[in-house]
Image 1 (cartoon, helix red, strand yellow):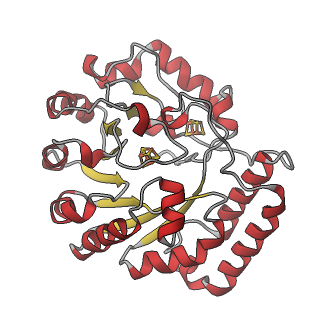
Image 2: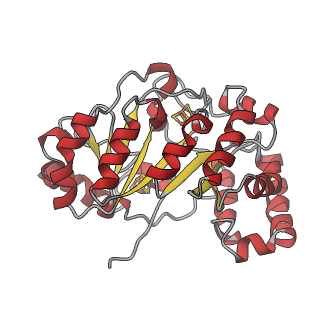
Length: 313
Ligand code: SF4
Ligand code: SF4
């Protein structure tokens, strides 16, 4: 289960509108009310995300409550205030994933909109020093794809256990709470596609061990899906085929309490977690939405950068 602890954010990513319009936080009281349905649903892992979850004043109490219930807790953070909270976060989360989109201060600031490369690196190191499993997430785009090797090295230097790469989402105009006209100049241009292929080949040649050990989460073949995605954005190929059953084993609760089948597809407007998460997920219209997704009827899936497939246990 993903819970958005806050719609607010201390980053200013060009890809995102949360930081412009976000106001709400999910309260400790609301999460407490979710507990019976989390248990009824057999929830194993709760990902605390947002917005920036560490901006929620009650984040530690919420994490502590969930961990005390035997739930596996996972934090997804911009990392801006992680250095300050590292000790507490390290003790409360089984895993901490930090977004790090540049290997130097200039690239980081150009993408994230804040001059915070140093503090984020410090936060990653501080959290890793507590013994927590810290991983780094890189959103690949025009401004940083040439830094893939440097980002792998930096993640290692900072004590992260893994680095993963994801293509910047430019195909879904409504992801990341986007309201205004979305400026899509973040994707690679046609003349840069060959350079990305060369970067991936060099990574395979020069950082083979990082693939073999799983330090780079994706296989070279999976990284080439990112290349194919950008080829499709340029109109030079079809989007890579998507296989995803995320809504069959997970769901998202927004800071306002609305339940959705995944990050990119909104649930019915009146599906509220406060009415019972299991009830919201088992409503006929939510089941119909999942069935539509399963049948390949949703356009968001065709261009999704974050599909997930899990075999049934
Ligand atoms: S993409 Fe994430 S970190 Fe960046 S502004 Fe949006 S919510 Fe914050
Ligand atoms: S492919 Fe993407 S948009 Fe479709 S259900 Fe999966 S996560 Fe959601």
